Length: 145
Image (cartoon, rainbow, N blue to C red):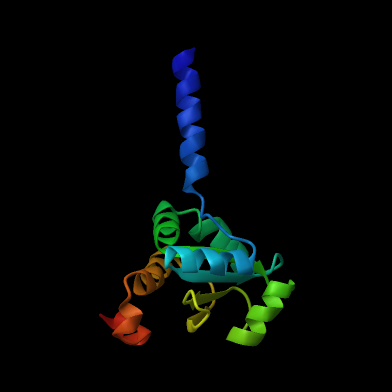
């Protein structure tokens, strides 16, 4: 009996730790990014967006995606129609949802990316920013390597 309980607890803890650790408040996210010296990955979404649902159901649950996001970024999930969403659209631009914004802790935008991506392509995007490649090569060239 104790063995079953231990297995269940380990499973629940492992599953709970696997999710992307989204911040939902932009100010809190910027404070955390500055404190931890990490880039922000802002995900602007709409609950009615088909492509946002694709990302949330097919891409974000992937262990590789969760690991690279949680290790290298302060991830922020912002609904487009909120005050934070309006701020992001005005200050960083907007094409539709989903939008991903990679932002320095001081608020400087590195790049915004529109659209839903297959897991392998999204991982390449994440690696581009997490590895600091954006500092030396344009994204188009990086993807051609």
